[in-house]
Length: 297
Image: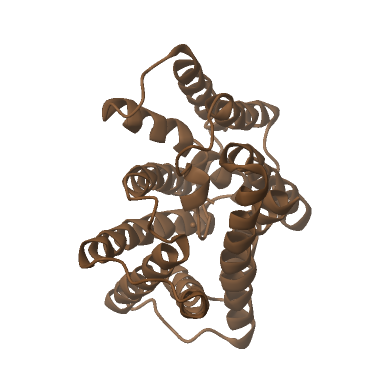
């Protein structure tokens, strides 16, 4: 139940972001507010828990991860501004297959039948998801490209994060990542002139995004991992796209074609295939996902 609650909260980030955009809040402003508020809360948790300060080297590594996560978040939330939330979140969910490809390329994992099957299923699902009948338009095409870029960045982020020592406290890691992301995205917004004080309604959506879809699901996720294990938690995370598709259909009338629904199911099936025999012996991707999952971060 805890993992399902976490997945639901993570998934709703796409909906909250679209609501913020609808009242005139820009992508950079939304993200700076989200990561800024989340960072304050996370640092408070770190102080209360009296978490040891990591070595300077690990701090620099966390800052680097924050830069990568800022790029991933900018691409993902940019995609949400340009395309349907249901399509975007399913496209981003090819990241487990991409992460597996990187793991094989780096010789961290072997290309066995299960992994190759997952890659094939994910690739087929991606092809079906992109089958829009030629009705996507320029904005939709941009959204697809941004979503796929977010998936690539997230796979790279997870690959780098997994290499860090298990002793690194996840709240400390997330606090540094959120702080770095907020500062980086504030710089982007300042340079592009797209950073502005949001209206009251926009500020409310940003606060909801930061608390309900960032801090709360992260804490609940960690509790869920302790209760059921990382592998089970990773499988239950597949509930997140279902939440987005259902809520987007009700609120915005978004509809995936039958072919795209099959493609989305294939992409999620590939995640289940990858997790079928995995055990919680190492820090699974679920522990580093969108802190934000974000992808659903």
